[in-house]
Structure formats: structure tokens, C-alpha cells
Image (cartoon, one colour):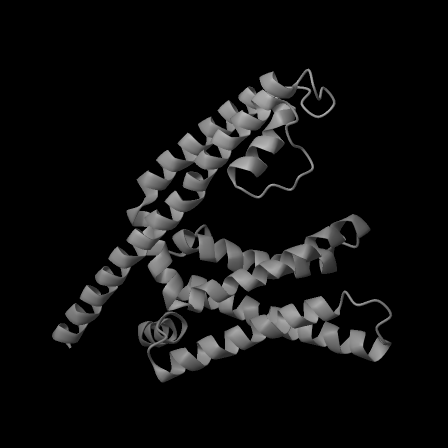
Length: 247
């Protein structure tokens, strides 16, 4: 039994072997097929034959994904850790709506079908580049948390400032600091939809400084991620060299 479990673990978790690559390609192909099927199913006026084919594709994909989910739990060294991990939850969400909408005949539960789009996230498991992103975010986690806190403070200060400048001139748009938060977010991110904008001189001058700060808010995360990815690639290269030396 241990040898069978070890062989299954190599197939499911190690994509460097031929069997592992085949397993990965099959799952990736089914994910794409399932997403295409989900999209086609939203087309109005589809013929009955097409609907039947889509239902068959859905059933086949769910069966395979369910088997994959069961295998990953079986071969995991710590099953509960996998079940409650990011990938484990994504794998569960990918199949759960199918069983819910099939076992309980309530129209309101059809909303759960929208979670089938989360199958797209299953693809992240098979991308080596995303592993580097994971390492990079671990490296710059503290900096990102600090940046998020500072960004939240800047959004609040911007909303407060524009409220005091524009409240009297545009009471319907800047009724409170909470109503001004939308303008603050749109302006600091330099999106500028133009649905809410200042009309007073003070408000326009204040907006200029907010936009300047917003440029920094947009560029700082990019620099942090680039630095983290560079370190992650270096770590990955060292791991590969170490593995090659051991072999």
C-alpha cells in the first residue's frame, strides 16, 4: 500500500516525471474545457443537443476533478493541511457547486454555479512562475502590509480633505467623508472616472497633490514585487543547483 501511495504521490504532486506531466496536462485541458463549457452555457437560445453535450462535459469534468481532489487528500502527508490550504479550498470550490445544485432542488442555489469560474484558479497550481510569485510575496510580505496600511491612511486623509473643500459646493456628491471615499480611491489610483470631481479652487489644488501621491502609490508595489521576484528567482536557481549536485 505504501508503494502504491508513493507512486500516486509522484504522479499527482511531481510534474517532472512523464506520468506527472500527463496528469497535469489532462487536468489543465479539462479545466479549460470546463470553463469554455461554462461560458457557452450562458449563450441564449442554445439548441437542446448542445445543452445535453454541455451537461455531459460538466459531469465528466466534475467526476475527474472529484477523483483528483480525493487523490490529493489521500497522498497528502498532512491531509487536513491540504484541505484547508489555498489550493485545497479552490479544488473543493471547483466541484462543490455541482453537487449542491444537483442534490438540493432550490432555484436560489443556482447562484452557486457562478463559483465554477473559480476553476480557472486551479490552473495556478501548474504554473512554475506563480510559485516564484508565492516566494516573492513571502519575501516582501511585511513591506506590502505596511504599504497597505499607509495606503488606507492616505485614502482616509484624501476623503477627509476633499470633503471639507467640496462639501458646500457639491453637497449631493460629497455629503460626508464616507461618500468622499469613492473619489479618494479613484483619484489615488489615478483611474479618474470623471463621475465625481472638484469644482472649487481649493479642491482642485488639493486634488493635484493627491494625484502626485497617487503616482507613488501605483509605482511602489511594482518595485516591491520586482525586487521580490528577483530574489525568488535567485532562491529557485540555488535550489535547482543544490538538487543537481545531490543527484
